[in-house]
Amino acid sequence: MNYRHHFHAGNFADVMKHALLGRLVAGLQRKEKGFLYLDTHAGRGSYDLTAAAQGDTLARQPEHPQGIGRLWGRPDLPEGLAEYVALVKRFDREQGNPGEAPRFYPGSPWIARLLARPQERLVLCEKQPAESELLDIGFGRDPRVKVLTMDGYAAPRALLPPPERRALILIDPPFEAQDEFARIAAAVGEGLRRLPGAVFAIWYPLTERARVEAFFGELLALKLPPTLELELTVAGEQSAVKMRGCGLVVINPPWQFDGEARRMLDWLADALAQEAGGRAKCRWLVPE
Ligand SMILES: C[S@@+](CC[C@H](N)C(=O)[O-])C[C@H]1O[C@@H](n2cnc3c(N)ncnc32)[C@H](O)[C@@H]1O
Image (cartoon, rainbow, N blue to C red):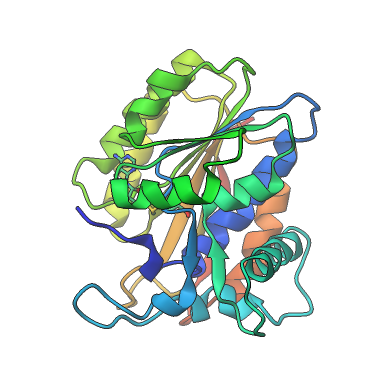
């Protein structure tokens, strides 16, 4: 497996995931007490979008113009998305892009790090040594951040409960392995046993609907606390677009996150549509 997120960086799925991640962090920050941010599949931390067109063996079509590119110049961003785009612009500038078009895009580790207060801690797990080395270079000197080259699915057992007894856990795998959904469900079960109040955000692609339904079944068998299902599709069910949508399951969402997410996703469904039939969905899988 040699998944490289940089081909996809800044695409519509990253926009959804990272904008919602920002709201989850803000929700947890309503309390003064710090929390652990655990990224089980962290990637390399940040991405140079000019490298997105260079494939390993074949040139690739960059995906960011259909994602962050669509939001970059919009003067009418709603609450939540305005903060997210401002954060990405700040990162892009701080990394040294003098240009008008986006170039440096923050992955989930940087989104969380830019928003972290002094009382937060970040643990970033990444299995590929080449990617985790880049994380180390980016974060190595920050005492709040720990980079671990390890299987992220083992992290809930190894790291929970944290001393803070509060945690936000992002599970964002590449979905290359056949048993990815089963491994997620097992890690979530382990995490909830160790810290029942932990907030989990689990990203998934909408490529084969049947597998997602089976995944929900596995999750529900864990007797979940309140859980939200959020989805964004950029094309209709019959579309030939390879990934026509994606979702985020949020376990133990912070207060009022559901309303924020609904408003953001409704707006994104219009702004990021690639074909007719795209839509936003926000429903309680397990009610509050
Ligand atoms: C979708 S990318 C992560 C993107 C990142 N969360 C972001 O939003 O910027 C998935 C990453 O998981 C890594 N990976 C794959 N299997 C893993 C595992 N079992 N444990 C930890 N990392 C893994 C891949 O090398 C890849 O960098």
